Length: 161
Image (cartoon, rainbow, N blue to C red):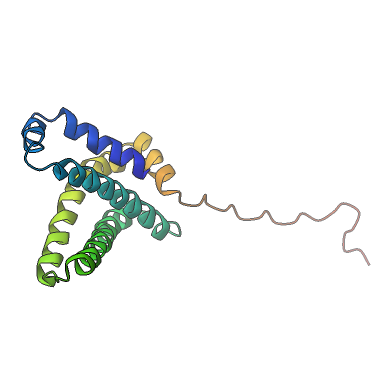
């Protein structure tokens, strides 16, 4: 799933008219494309991880409200994990430390943007039974367990004296 999200974000970047400006920047800084590729991969992993964790939390009781409230929480957790890796790399490579308040605000902004991107698809899946089933398949909630049927008495074994 992370690969599909990454491929979709890279395709959206390539067909975007503003991508020509980024291609012009590569003459000055060749790492721009690597940074964008890394960001697309991290974004794919964040979306896939947040959806998977939301699905795990909704397996006991699946409801629209539960999905809508848990998804932003897990998006924020995944963005914080990605930012934590960035903090560790910066600390090891440069010996610098990042501002924690900027990190929390930055991940909050990325969470809001990510949720705003997913929200139309959530609304579509909440209103359409076709897409609701697809969302349930994606989140993999368990099938409801049917109650066992009451045992019928066997013929010939009645309670006769």
